[in-house]
Length: 404
Ligand code: ADP
Image 1 (cartoon, protein in one colour):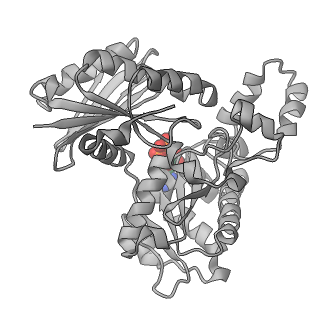
Image 2: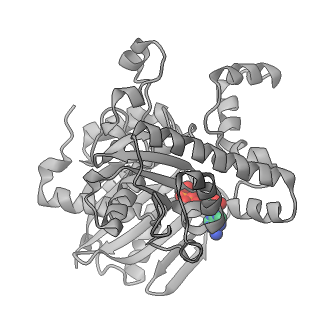
């Protein structure tokens, strides 16, 4: 049986999903966690069972060896050559990649070159790519980029108002992120509404640990909240979202920091919901703390909601209308209260949630029939999206060609 492995390789973790073809059934999914640090472990879920083991995993090579060994031992593949394709999620594709590509030496070079735009992610993605290339040399290897979907944004939405040479010489522009998720969710939204995607004006809200919104018009990404890097846009778990560039210099002086990486790290790891609440980066904890009367938890939620609503307003005007608003990812899929708080701010526009549907969530329309704008929940499935890209490339390899 032909099988495809989809990999999301992080700096200290490796997530995977194993699909069977042509059914697209998920045979197994899992996580190798804390690679290169203490307490590493592997978890594999398959056929209603769960395999979990804690053991030292010193680097990505050991992690991939272990995963492939376990897939055979757990009878998820009979031999490794059953895995005919491996899809890798890559965070930054810069201006080079506007579609998924077959990985070759030039692609690897370009992903490495783009590490400046995603300093944590791209090097980790590359580690995964290189180890799988060694271990499964005959499998088709594809890279799918988080930024690729946003290549259709017009210049007025991707340019910053800075010297134009910064864009020309240094690639300073809005690249966005979460594109694989936004594209999947947009397609599912159109399918649920039984309308052609190209006719719809949509806003997809990917609200997880990292959060971004995407305005989708004429079937394509038109604008998005993340920018040059995934630090900007709305309030996130530990990331600040939009801030004034001047405050970077100001706080470096106040905190007596000499290394710019230190202030970026504070904006990336100590800000957002965690920074405002002072309690936690996890929305579940913050909602619970708010219920306990913690004022700063309530403030963190207010800021989170306000920043999202601000962009919904902006995109509504930019697109000159809105047919549907779709929630996805950890918070978007699982928190009826956050969906409610956001939609309450839009009630003046005639947006109405059906309380029962909102409470149930799942892949569904959550608004009342008379709501002026449809509100939906669509659980994201980035791995399935990558799998489908691979299937298309297998049918027509020219689709996966990368040319400079
Ligand atoms: P990532 O961006 O890392 O992929 P996820 O999309 O999995 O993250 O989202 C993770 C976040 O989702 C958690 O940090 C948590 O705040 C939030 N979350 C998960 N379940 C719930 C829930 N029931 N209510 C509120 N927030 C939730």
